[in-house]
Image (cartoon, rainbow over all chains, first blue to last red; front, side, top):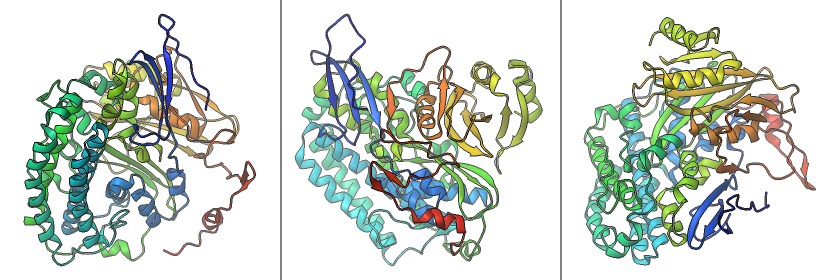
Length: 379
Length: 181
């Protein structure tokens, strides 16, 4: 595990660098073995697994309901996606209906999580280029979203709010109004972010024309989500396989245009997430305007139920891409198998090719731009 | 693509490769059980088939069923939007032994991290005759010296590891099946 692999390239004398698993330039625990030709990265190998918690095995050892909490830990930054994808799979397995109000509440949480995740992404990008001021502004605004989570669920992280057949509770008093307030605040602040950071010439210099992901690399690695869309690939599970009523909502799928440099470069990936935030706010407004009345939980499934033997596969669009969940039941009180398909696995696979030819000083920026969720990849 | 057309097309790619075709859960997707020896031929054929063009391996999932390991390939076309679930079984010689299985990395490169995971956690050694696996990514899920394959059903949790004692109460909970609903 600790053995350093020497470069197989005998034509030049490469310096071998080993970074990680814990290092300031890395967005998450992982180890990079770099072969350097001067300041240029000639080859790279990635080692992950440092955050492995045995999550899928743990899911097999706990009751169906308890697994919701573990699914929530799939990616602590965006807890609701793990819960949602697992609940969708179990509901398909049990042929469970979800009341329309519960569907909308779930989507409100999902889109708020997307906003929160993209703000955190911007924080990591700002940290990678050394822009301290914007980090404080972004974290200040993200706190407002965490306040909303607390108002609705009682928790700021690890929400544990979804149930089979709905959600744990109805919206609290004043929650919807505050969601709209926060959306309006972020809409105004977006201009501030853009003036201070997005189109700041220093950030443009650090992020344009580097880490370009061609469409062929995206297809070979199976990359989905904002990273794929930034490279011009129009694929979003919310449109291709709509779930929880996304087909009833009007929103656009932004695609990379290469405004700052190349299509699919670091700056394009950053800009795309800003555009996605605008779309998420539009979705939130529509959800709140059209929030159906009625039950928030299918009571039938709360009062004792069994999951029939069988299997199901669900997929959602998380903030990082396609998140899948394959669930198998043998009819007992415990899942026979819970397998997650995290989007970050594909992003990790792209790193060796993506970093080839990159200058060493661009490494933190390129890695931060990929939005790696190592917690979900390592499970 | 309906069931009969699918079977005809698959048998055209590799005669006698299809063992069974079922519906996957409550979905409309076909679950095709295949003979493992035809896996590589079928994978290549499905990707090149002008009608199906199944060019994207969306997910690879493994589960142990009655001492056999079931490998499920969730395949999708980015062109035609067709989806298919392809399945194969492999039985390890003993519960603790590794087993060899053909890799599909040569056809769907995105299978690499999934196969790497399954290799470590299920003890399946994926072999690629074309040697097209880049191995640019390596998982270290298990510490050095860890014995067994944790995601197999027969796996027994160690009671100690390098002198550190482990106590896992949920093992007994699951065996008793006394959890309140």
